[in-house]
Length: 178
Image (cartoon, rainbow, N blue to C red; front, side):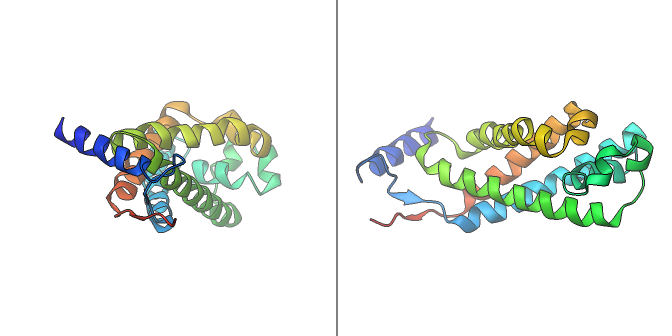
C-alpha cells in the first residue's frame, strides 16, 4: 500500500509540470534494453514449443523469417521444420527490431500511467505484441498466422512483458525537458 501511495504522489508531482506531461521520463535506452531482453526471453519458449510439438527448433524461427522470405510463405510445415539460414538471419533481425520498437513505446507510455510499472508491463507488453500480431501478422506473414500455436505464443508474450517491464521500470527516470 505504501508503494502505491508513493507512486500516486509521484504522479501528482508529475502533473504539476502542466499540460498533462510527466515531470520525469524514461530514457529511450531503457526501452531498447528492456525490449531486447524481453525479446530474448521469448526465444526459449518458442524453442521449447518447437521441440515439444515435434516441429523442431527451426519451425518457429522459419515462421518469423517467412515475413520477409516469400518462398517460405508457400512452404509446407515439413519444409518449415528445416534449417534456412536466410530465415534465421531475417527472423532474428525482425524479432529484434520489433522487440526494441515495442520496448521504446512502453518506455514512452509508462511515465503517464499510475500504479506499478510491472503491472503495466504485464498488461501493455503483451497487448502491444498482440496488437502488432493481429494487425500486422495476417497482412505481412499469413503463414505464421496460419501455423502459430496460440498458447505458447501468449506465454512468450507474457514473458516479454514481464522481462521488458522489470528492466524498463528499474532504469532511473530523468527530468523531462521543459
